[in-house]
Image (cartoon, rainbow, N blue to C red; front, side, top):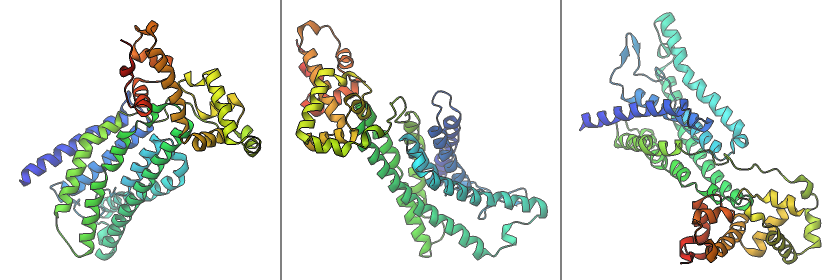
Length: 374
C-alpha cells in the first residue's frame, strides 16, 4: 500500500512540476494570473519534495531538518488570493496586503539560502547556532500563521467574488461575465485541504507526532487539485478581459440628489424605459450602466437605484429582458424562419449563445427554441 501511495504522490509531483512550468511559460494562455497559478503549483511541488523525498542528506548537507529546504507554506495563501483577485480585477485593492506577505514569505524561504551559505562557508548550519526550541518555535509559528492567513484570504476571496457578481449585475449587461462556476470550484476545492491541514496542526498542538492520516488525506486532495481544478482554472480568461472598463461618472454624481428630488422613481422609470425603447440601447452587446448614463444624461447611481427599487431587479437583468423581448419578436416572425437562433440572439443584443439561453430561461422559463415558429 505504501509503495502505491508513493507512486501516486511522485506522479503528482511530476505532473505538478510540468503543469506549473506550462502555466508560467505558456504563450497561448499568457497572463499574470496563470503565472501566479504556475508558481502556486510549484510551491505544492516544493512542499511535497520537502516532505516525501526519501533522503536525509545531499553529500554532507542535511535536507531533513527545518529550513534545510525552502519553507514555502506562506506563499500558498498569498498566491491563491493574488490569483483570484487578478481574475476579478481587484488586485489594486489589496496590493499592500499582498506585497507585505510576499516580502514575509520570501524572508522565511530565504532562511534556506542563509543556511546554505553558512554550510558552504563553515560546514555548519543554522541548527548549530540556534537551539532546537528556537528553530522549532520559528518553524511552527510560520505554520500556524500560514494556516490562519489561509483562512483569512479564503474569506476575502469569497467576499470579493460575491462583490464582483453584484458589480456585474448592476453595471454590465454582458451575462457571460457571470459564468464563474469554475472560479467557485477553484476557491472551494481548497476547503478540504484547509480542513485537513487544520486538523493536523491541532493534532500537533495537542502533542501528536509522526505521520498521521490527516497528512495523507491532505495530499490526496492536493493531488486532485493538481490534476483537475488547476487545469480548468488555467484555461479561463480574466473576467474583465474584453469587457469595457467603467469610468465613474463624476459629471453626473454631483447632480444625483437634484435628479432624485426633481423626479420620483416612477417618473424616472418612465424616462429610462422610454429612452431604452426609443433608442434600443440594449442592442449594444457591451452596454454598461455608465454608457446608458452618458446617453441619457442621468446619474448612473440614480438609474441603478431606480431599476433596483422600482423594478426589483438589477441592471443586467433589466437590459437582458429587453433583449429577450426583441428576440421573441424575431423568433415568431415568419419572415425570419431561416435565421439561426444564434443569429437572432446577436441581432437582439446578446453577446453569446449561453447568455441568450440563460436570459430566456430566467425571464420565460423556456429556451429560445421553444418559441421558434414552425
